[in-house]
Length: 252
Ligand code: MG
Image (cartoon, rainbow, N blue to C red; front, side, top):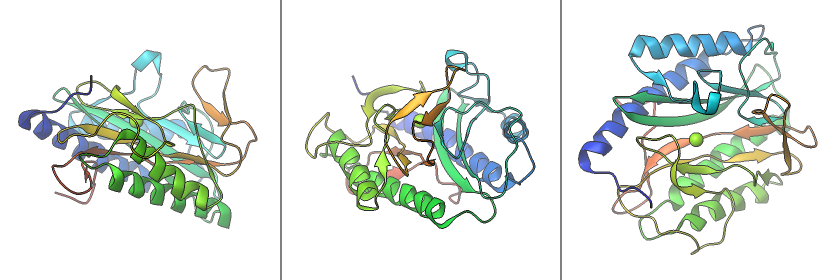
């Protein structure tokens, strides 16, 4: 059952998503070589406190961080801690907040200082894949159209899409129906309707799409240790045209 949000619920989602996007932009701008992933998480937690919102991830299934911070060959669900961020790293920050009972979920991958050309290209393709996914999230389309769009952009660039983790509906709960794979067949899957709020989140790899989970039970890493990028927006399926990006930091 895919929730269709009422006008009041959409208003609530707008507020949560706006705050989530603004804090993610602040966290991304705060990334510096020499700091630890724990330092970055503490900064994010402080910004959430200052804005009067809660982390949607802290304690979710026992997750110990306010954010997920994944470096280089880590795909998603990195646990913030003592790891030092270095120039040349890719730092994926996934950040969700709860505001007045609604959740905004978004992620970005930051290039720290000068990164190698293939890493920069990976991040650019991930963002392009997300844009294609958002463009495909139109009323009357189906979930498979989103995944197909993400997959097409990614594979045309010579990269792969992770199969084992996917996007999702989001609203009062962090994970609602439907699941939104980053691969798919056009015209297949549940139909998209106005008022659905969806987290679209390409996770793309330089090498194999195969991943493994570290001994901590959370962190997902590429099996071949090549790099991965992740970006995410929460969007609203509109009556017409592409979905509206709710996690847009620039908007007032
Ligand atoms: Mg998500």
